Length: 147
Figure 1 (cartoon, rainbow, N blue to C red):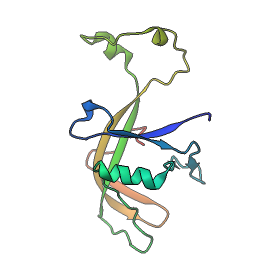
Figure 2 (figure 1 turned 180 degrees about the vertical axis):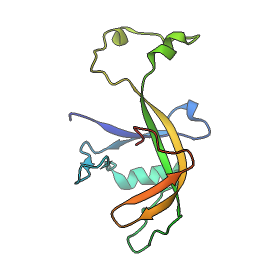
Figure 3 (figure 1 turned 60 degrees about the horizontal axis):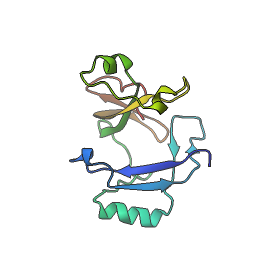
């Protein structure tokens, strides 16, 4: 396998304790047919993984069916990660700069140093059709890199 994907489940009240569980994902993402910034990755052993997640307290959310119409001003939630470049200047000025091990010193320019910061915002639908949605948020445009 060229890439391996996994999903980790954390306790949102105590994320510092680390992952409660890690679930393997299939090694082949399904990309959006029109080239939009969206991909789907399925769980390996989906039934067992979903049962284990429910036992950990994970709440499943279901997509709305086509028969349910979206209404103007419906509230929507944007929940994901803002993707940003690692800020080397902040690390250098930090009172406790990160320790570098041999592997970090040997990194190449091709290494992915992006940082994923949790991000949540709410908005309201301005326009909705079966193909496209337009929503406004109180904070303005969503951050670049939000996934």
